[in-house]
Image (cartoon, rainbow, N blue to C red; front, side):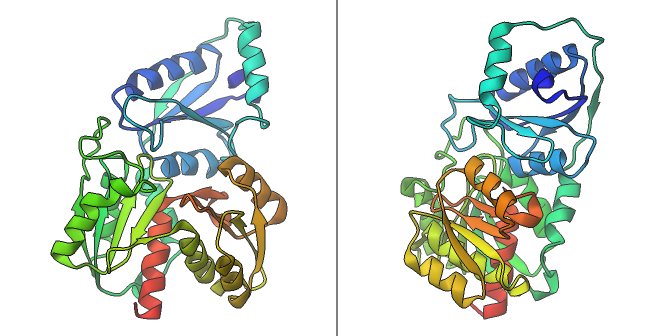
Length: 323
């Protein structure tokens, strides 16, 4: 990464998995051995990591240790350029592989490490996109799946006292003792739906492990499909962006296109895959994109995902429409 991006400063973050601290330590040692400095943001979500990488020009690239929504036995790395654009197949990964196989790593002066937790700044950022005064009282249940969402959500809802928030599995635990942190699998919503029958909330919410995806359950206990959420979010975002382009993935219902048109937007179908969509948004200037898999991307948030920002938009939308 350091050689490929010619990085002087690299952001390193990690999730709550048992293997993440050791992997992050190895990453930091590798980066500094190549002469680059490290901004160590510690245990964090992927949206917080993306904020740390993209918000400041002094960061050249980032490495996030996470396996996202995958089972506990897995781990891996999310690599990004300094603007939070992913490094993947066709966008740098092959070049990095070639450098690794060549193995020509010259000894450098060891770089410095600065520990810099940044979650509070991230929360300020996402709240800048909504009007808190518009968010009305309601009751919601959130299943954080023992992923990275819990600690962030506790801080978010301190700023939303009008919301009665019932928490489930907020303590980060990389063994995922209750269920996989993957809201796209219906079986992972069983506990949430059971609790909803008991307390009758206005909305149910489920996060994935690293907080870049979020799923919703309506007040009747029905799972809301990702393409329907794309339509709702597009409608909300287009209120202040009339005439803007919105991308939706090719698996989506035709009603998504119709909703975007009715809201004054320009719908454009796109291929599936977060790296492709993020690149496409930067090329077309689209203000928002959504996938059936519940990945939602925002132009004003570096064209990347944030489950927390998505939740704030939905709370504002429900309040404005009285639902």
